Image 1 (cartoon, rainbow, N blue to C red):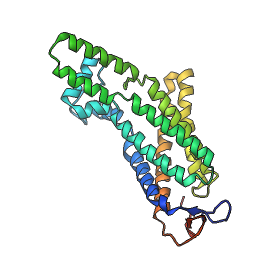
Image 2: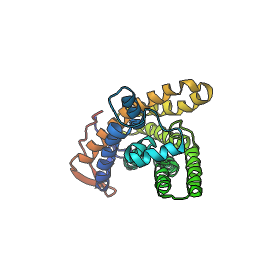
Image 3: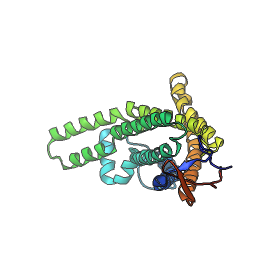
Image 4: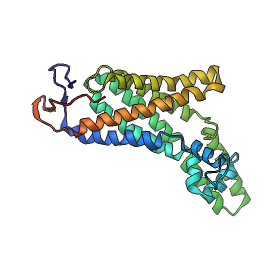
Length: 275
């Protein structure tokens, strides 16, 4: 099945974006394999079954406990504060950028909307993640010599945790960022169904993954004890979707250009649909 253009029956691919396609592909695959996982939950599981011998068996419950953990083991403390979710969101941002370049011919308006919502969601998470704020407060607490200084830093730490508590997933930033990124993913998956660049099965997997992610909010309201079901199912299908996206973007970016003729872009006459 060849890639076709809406107006000329030959989809054109601007060679200027080939590097972006490869970057987006790498970001999608890295996000799927490494950062799409809940690293803090994985650590706690391995710690409680005895495969990891160091560190707490539960996330710290008080500000002072967080400060002590960050002083004794910065990497572990930052992991439990979801630092690596920032990396994941950054990778997703690169993937969205490559998808916008690839799918804008299918629907420029919907892809612009998806990109706007996606990048807004990413920005919200960057602003609301408390990892570096807690690390800075922990360092100040360790250097403080007066009780009044330490009391003020403890109060500041409590305020930071109230904004985004990584253990209980409380905080507007976390909910809003995931919601916006899921909406963006749903729009992108729908546009995939209109494009010859991606197989329809990739679009359907994306719709299912992001719809399940949005189902988390419904479950949170009406059946909070079951919130793990939609979020876990969504994570599985997102992993599959990212792998499909990464593989396809890499294939598009790696194909040899054969001729040029349409609106200053380059036509690839024999790109076979792989998925």
